[in-house]
Each structure stands twice: as structure tokens, then as C-alpha cells.
Amino acid sequence: MGGTAAYELLLSGIDCEARVERIVRGVSWTAALLSDGQAGVAMRTAGESVPRRFETLAGLPAREAARAVLSWNLEEASEGMAVVNACYNRPERMERLGCFYTDSALEGVELAGKTVGFVGHLLHRNSVTERLLGAAKDYFILEREPRPGDYPDSACEYLLPRCDVAVITGSAWVNKTMPRLLALTKDALTILTGPTVPLCPALLGLGVDRLNGQVITEPEAMLKKIAEERCSVNAFSRHWTLDAR
Image (cartoon, rainbow, N blue to C red):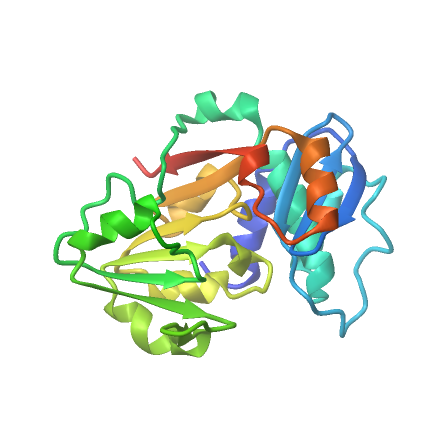
């Protein structure tokens, strides 16, 4: 499933009755706070070269506001994705879905002799993920803003089909590259990870094997922090993982 169809699948599962109370454009994150107190975040992605679909998302029903994720105004798409995550990534859904806690998106994945590709700079020094990669045959990082040792994201077309395991940042939903990335990793064990990932079980039917996302547990503290500085949202959330069965 490609293009808009993947997004429509994501949007069709939203059953939240709340409205959008507030949108916060932070330094590196965009957040949506709903009228029932739940918040969601997405990586803030610059790009306002085309008009917005909505004048503002504040005050709209969440199900309507979530459709902003389809916008090619990427600032607006970030807001829409934050609304999507506020609808899906909620404490009361986690046990019902069979979600569980992991220290790393790769925890429990067999990596011995495998080639692992990361879309997004998702590997950090002295992390659990770095330790787990010790068993892998090889790994590489593809990044839109490459750091030393990273490949540019345009290398996805060439490198991802060689991967046994692919770990993809959820921010690919915002910039609209997710459907293509999933096509390139169709033969790999594919994991979506990060605060922008919606814990939407329907996505597991798109060739995704694991969703590793975050539920915001301290909305107001997070909103204040992201508005002030570039930061992680880990201190204000809990990681949850959902595997295909």
C-alpha cells in the first residue's frame, strides 16, 4: 500500500471524541494538546512553501484536525501528526493492544550476522541499542542532515534493499517518505521508532513488524520544555512497543 492510502489507513482508525485545545510549535518538536488532557508530539519539520489546509487546528475535532498530516505544508503536517499521536498513544490503549515496555527498539530482535539500516540518526553512544548492535554483521545510518559517518538519505534507494533489519524514524510520516521507505524494506524486519510513531495496530498490516512509540505522561511540563529549547521528550513520556503477531 503506497501514497495516500497508507495515510488514510492511519486516519481511519482514529475514534477519539476530543477536540484540539492547543498546538505548540517547539524548537524541535510540535505538540498537540487535546481537550481531554492527552498530548501527542511529532518531529517539527520546516516547510511552508504551500498554503495550509486549515487556518488553525485549535478548536477542531481531533479526527478532523488529524487530516492535516496529509498537508504538503510540512509545518502543518507536523501539527496533524501530533494530533494523530495524541489520539493513538494513550495510556488506556496500551494494555488493551498488548503493548509492552522495551529499553531499545531492537530489544529481542535477532541481529547475529544481520545488516541493519537506520533511517534517521537513531543510534546514540553508550545506548542499549549500540550494545545490541555488537552482534550485527554491519549497520549504517541514513540521515537528511548527515553527521560524520552517516549516509545521505538519498542513499535509501540503494542501501535499504540490502538490509535484514530496518529501523525507521516516525518523522518519515510527516515528510511523506514513509510509504516509499516501507516499499524499500519489504523484505526486511521493519521497525518504526521514536516519539512521532503512532501505536496504530493497522500499520502492522503494511509490512511493519514492530511499532516503538511514546505515550506522553506529563503534558504541561513537556509543552513548556519543548517551547523553550531543543530537547528530548523522554522525561515526559513512556516508551511502548507493539509487535506484529
